[in-house]
Amino acid sequence: QVQLVESGGGLVQAGGSLRLSCAASGRTFSTYAMGWFRQAPGKERDFVAAISWSGFTTSYADSVKGRFTISRDNAKNTVYLQMNSLKPEDTAVYYCAQGRDSTVVTGTGRYDYWGQGTQVTVSS
Image 1 (cartoon, rainbow, N blue to C red):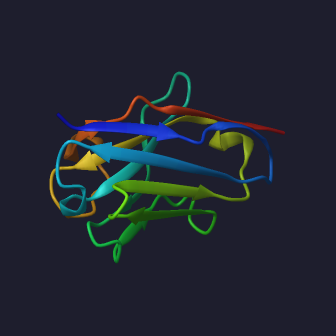
Image 2 (image 1 turned 30 degrees about the vertical axis):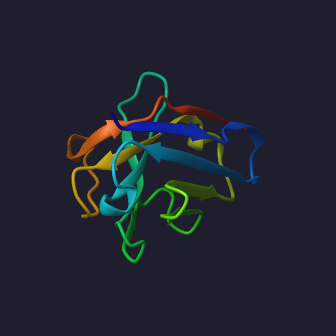
């Protein structure tokens, strides 16, 4: 059974930084693409970033390009999301997800497994 456990969320002032981590277990981590999504209250779950199995290919939502960086350490079965220059509109629950294969995709329906989420709150 695949398990994804996020950590690193919290409260930060606008302009600050946070680094989210997602530890995976249950199947060969290095085979699959990984993604980060977020969901604000009353809104749909939105794509944030994704990374291929090798880490060579990444994709970002326009709203986070230049501020967020996704990376992975296959030796540690962990994917990261470095978030800089945070804005109040980045406030949401952040979820990591494991894709169906090695391909970078942005749709929620293309991810098989999800973590429980970690809250990120950015104060103005």
